[in-house]
Image 1: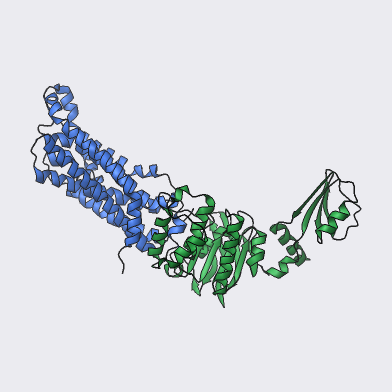
Image 2 (image 1 turned 180 degrees about the vertical axis):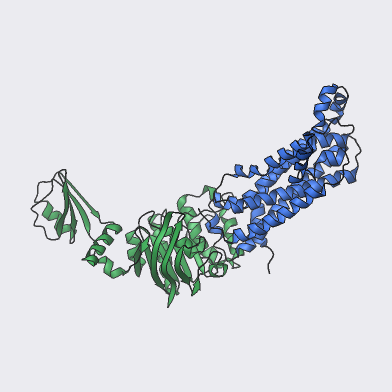
Length: 290
Length: 265
């Protein structure tokens, strides 16, 4: 059963593209990752789903209800965390939480528990909070009414590693309760850890959904060598480009093996990094095309 | 049907309270200052040369008692500055959420846009009422301070009409924000009271019969303090009906517009 169904969803702001075309489904109880570079249309898609803006074309449903601007009833079942959580700056954290608690007509038990878990100081004013603490306040507000669907836009940005872990654990707990989670992110490790499936958005287009397992096989390292080793026989190391005395390689395999093999060459500089999510998806696409 | 959200009203009121208090007290205390100066300045009026007296006629003429003095010196100021406050109240009720980017956090709540609209409108109305009341009370107290008796009914009548005019300006500002794209500078709201005030002044100053008719195109006419407190002119019901009707139409159209509004951050 699908919680979210999107078919050819499109949004233009006048002549400017917000979202070219999005087609995907999010199943009930799954964690669905939605990744792409800045400006690709992630936030536009989320705002369309939340009924904050009008679509230009296509269809989208949440819990089998067509999404439209002003869908108050749907909001009852949705918890939303914006990428930058803005609240009423002159109010205290406690004041903001009480406002949302009263508006959602819920008791304070869950709020108190979440506030404690995310180490929020209720006495502080919102304007005194750091970006990360504002995010934590946003998380508590998104979760306080125990929604059936969570829509999270870049949820871990600004959180310290410990808090990121607490947050990801919380999401897994919510998943166990049957909550559907739709999250946008550009952090592979976070998507990898918790998502069941993932879709990528590029230039406003979402048309393919990947099982997380199938994406993992494309994980690799990007290696920069100076000078380039053009006659490399190192297993798993493949030259991608060579320019200005530098060689760029993709490497699939054991890192310890690679370092030992590279030690046999006379190199002035070596850089090894994880391939970015986008690079991995490009590889995936290339394979699909081939 | 729920008319308004008590919690949202409380939030909005709390958030606007400091501004409301600042505006009310600063203009209210200006009124106090103007009134308490009367015993010191009343003699000056009798010594004004005739050529200046003619010029002053365009701005209410020479006052002969404290209420007339209030009309020419305080009332006109209250009208103009009060309108600036009112239009900002109305405009910011819509614009502030978008400007401060709280719009996403607020409209994720399970309430219809209509409820938000009605609650915000009610809050604007309440604030304008409080503003007008504080000014009314402070002015009234000031008349006692200088030990001058006034026609209470006439003074209250002016304040009532002035309050209606402020509500009209506030609602027009509210409507303007609904029709403009998000994240506009609130200075744009001044485009409502300033031209209307200038039209009002022009229609008073001119001797041209056609230009005089401009007075029907401004709400400052039916609440003109000089007409009410000094000239005891007949009630300018055309200006009143025109602007009450216009406000009803603007609010109705804004309601439709707001329900379809795209919230941008």
